Amino acid sequence: MILALFVAAAVMFIYSTFFGPKREKKEAPEQPAPAETVAKTPPETAAPGTAAPETTAAETAVAETAAPPATTEKPAPAAPAKVPERVKTGARAVVTTPLYVATFEDAGLVRLELAQYPPDEDQLLFARLDEAGAPPYAPLVEASENARWEVDRTTLNVGAGKTGKLVFKLVDGERVAARAEYVFRGDDYEVAANVVAAEEDKPVTLSTGSFVKAEEDPKEVGEISVDALVDTKKIRDKLSGKDEVKNYRGDIPWAALRSKYFIIAAVAPQGEELTVTRAKNDTLAGTYLLKRGGDYKIYFGPKGYDRLKEFKVGLERTVDLGWSIIGVIAALMLRLMILLNGVVHNYGVTIIVFSFIIKLLTYWPTAIQLKSSQRMQEIQPILKQLREQYKSDPQRLNAETMALYKKYKISPFGGCLPLVLQIPIFWGMFNALRNAIELKGAPFLFWITDLSQPDVLFELPFTIPLVNIGSVNMLPIIMGVTWVLQNKFTMPGKGGVKSEQQKLMAWLPVVFTLLFYNWPSGLVLYWTTNQLFTMGQMFIMRKSMRPLEAND
Image (cartoon, rainbow, N blue to C red; front, top):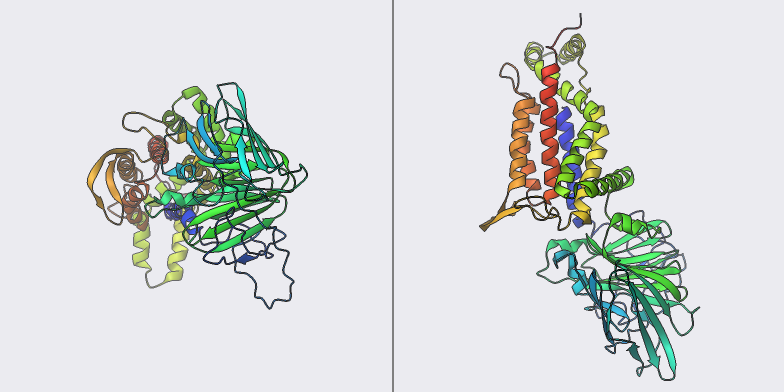
């Protein structure tokens, strides 16, 4: 029963961490507020930056619910300020540093290539920043049709440890309608920015960027979203097939366009409004209103948890480490793992060593759980006799069963509490490994060249339907084999009696091998290593355990 509880918890955990994000498209954002208004956009409505969305606004954070009926007695809140159209004149500059090559056009980021991370499906947002509406950081200001952007240089090379400045001006006749300055560092993804619309104390609207999904895109693009912190609540709007505009008002110190591993963020203490547009063609875009112009920060690159935490505004919450205590545990484990890798210099070895450390920390509760499970197996023949003897008298069967437990000093729930204590640890580790940018592109040994991807040994000429297996991945297979060995080693059965627990466990290696088959190899390595350490612990315990004795 104890192991069955573990399996149930593990399956729930796997479902929530793996399948949850897909379902999140249709669910409300976390902690919805009742004052939100969502307006359906007309079919011809363009993304923010190309036309002004027509919607109403909420005074606080919003939830993904339908707009209240027009007959409601509550007065409609004031509509958000009209967003000016993007002024597009093609003033382009390319910034090159040891970390990236960034292309800016008309003061907005239109393309980004990271030197340390080869292009893949998770970086699709970097290649499509200018496909719908305005690109990230582009100021959206009122200007005449004759206004033109000017840039002080077309190329800027910034070496390691150096800085460089890029200046854009929106010239409208005799006046400068807007000015955007960016100061780049050769050793970081952070950029110091300053934006002014005519006058410094005038509000400025920035684009958060946009993303347009293509039919051939992989499922990983479902991770792409617009995130922001509204007062103290993090909101997230993902790609959707809906036509809708959502408006958030409050203290908004940052807004970002992000994927699983990467982020394009604006950090501005003067942020006060965010508008997110989602269209049926799977377009996601947003605008970020600053109550006044001036200094702010931008960051584009990998979502390193500790690096984002340095902004001290909660930007690290864009890294999905789980909710409540799970997130705290995951963040702690991720930090310890990064610290350990500073000594080991191989994340595969780091995962193995870290798994061993966790096994030491959980040795005592695991020992209680394994001992309880072993003792329950030893009395299975006696329990079978009792069930046959008292099958027509349930009350007597229950009394005799409890007496048997007391006689042999066995608690039927002896392993439950230790198991409950361990679940948050396993869950936190799982979340940390699944979302850590540190594992992206990190090799282990031999054929395992990227711990954030499945460990494909070779591709098959076909794909097995339903389970989506089109390659030979060795780690999940090794994990399944070790699980079978662990079952035989830890639960051999007594007198040929197989409990319901044993029957269930016999199928788990198959089920979990299929579940883990296409998961990141770092996760599978951790789980496999933990299996092996558990087998070692059981071997030690069996040598030291005395035969079952009655409590005389």
